[in-house]
Length: 209
Image 1 (cartoon, rainbow, N blue to C red):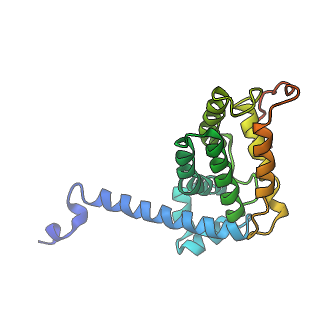
Image 2 (cartoon, rainbow, N blue to C red):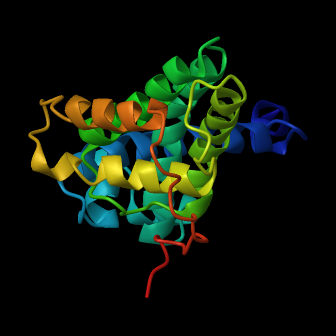
Image 3 (tube, rainbow, N blue to C red):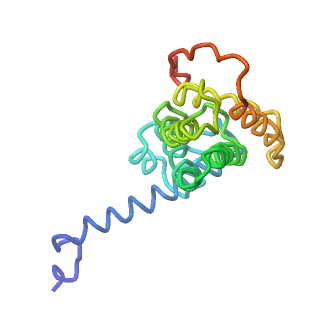
């Protein structure tokens, strides 16, 4: 009887339980990571594990290094706060409206999370934002609503970096960054007097030394 009452001896029972536990722990770690890094971008993995109510060994089983953990937090922020806005942006008939939605989501999320840029950011994460935005730029150019000399890929990344760079100059509650988003949006729709200089290839700005 004891063998039948012990679910760990029944094939197919123990492993799903472990997967559920691992998934639950990962969610606790990511939630704690978002909260802790928002207050202190230099917080240690121990700080995050303690806030999650888990041992450091459990954290490292899911995220082998602190960098892995921070990247996981950034991906989680992107998936929950930015990706839905990108889907909405691409569904807009007017690509200019879509661009505003996309850039505004990136700015508002970054301002709220206060994770010091570019901590945890990678070119891969940035490209997940840039793909939809580049398509919006191309559609705007086809409709003649955006200036034709924009490079949909190279200019989009640099515009994002320009906009994010102003965030440290505002308090967490401020939305004063909207002024600079408006300036950029105006520049994107202006009829140029002269073509822009050529857009140079991107050098990965997130590479660590």
